[in-house]
Image (tube, rainbow over all chains, first blue to last red; front, side):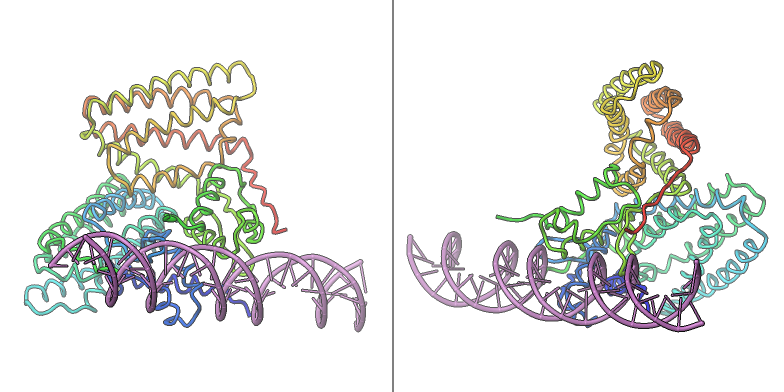
Length: 240
Length: 240
DNA sequence: TCAATCCCTTTCGGATCCAATTTGCAGTAC
DNA sequence: GTACTGCAAATTGGATCCGAAAGGGATTGA
């Protein structure tokens, strides 16, 4: 029986998901022994996993002190959006002439679902009820699924990898649940998706590029508003 | 006395430089024991270093078989140039309004030197003499220095990191020395640098962006010509 | 009261040791 | 001659062990 993956890789994947998903908040100090007893392995594979996370920029490595989950600054966040904007624009332009009818049909299906979820979210936001996390996650997934079709058609694995790496600098989902006026974001996102899909449909790579870029940048602007109102409060847990 | 860096990090840095510099050719299999006796350490830090290289995409990790230096395919190379083109365009646009007189002066100094080196290289190419490696390296460094000013002024560390990561997928410098008709590239590069500098000088971020993008893309086109004539011969050493 | 020093605990980095997997080769059956 | 089996060498993955660095607290001295 072939193993096909090492424990270090498994651990790295799990921690990666937990960090980008927000389950492990920024600033957390990761102790090797904790992780080794949690995953029921020795510290050796744990350290290899941590090296990988460090190379990916998810944690910072202080020699002889430990690793801590990196917290992202406002400027880093803005930059990540800039990178995403450029690369998604590129991918969208490249994908446009390669789109096949079934790809477009898939985009339509996803977009329809996305529209429904958007309505539900706005409904919820207007009613003032507490946010439903699962609904939000679904909305997010539909959002990503839309872009994933584009990435798949574009066939630019490097671009996809980098853009998705930048995408994950999201500070977790709770940011999005923070303010009710994100209503505007929901509606705009939906409209922009449709505009992008239409531009692709008529085969205008240029237009699709511009729209994709603006789409990401407008998300950026709204996120910044949220961060301001949240007070950019990056409280940093100490080493203890 | 504080160590300030671990052996794993040191080893990773050295190997990184050797791989991107071409000293360790693509396809090479890296044996843990070889490296451990070369660096006079045990295999533990070596493996951590290899994990980092794997996370950076410089080597591929096959469980229970070993690591090998990744060889870059033509499509990967093309993609890397696309990424660089977008990100350098972005950086150039952002840098334009932030340029101070002394920054511009520095660009002029570098560009002047770059022009001289370009002339020397073209001279050498026309004379049919064997390429002077050090001259070429100098030319390359001046080329990079020009762009580095832009990156420094732009103050976009993430963009800089990604773009430079894509820049290093260069298959070493010998590619550039392969054909004499790169003459054209030398001249064009020089002219494009000047155009970019002038666009920045008049404060047109839009123009600078477009010029920077075309600059990188034209390098890409010429590289592809070279690869075609070279026969894309990616001979892969076996596992032995 | 406050600062410097020593020591003890915690935690990390690295070395060594052992188990598991792969691989090459010899031998054998057909 | 070819394909298959089984063993042995090479190599990796992981566990355990040890020395060293960092941090905290008590003691001492001014």
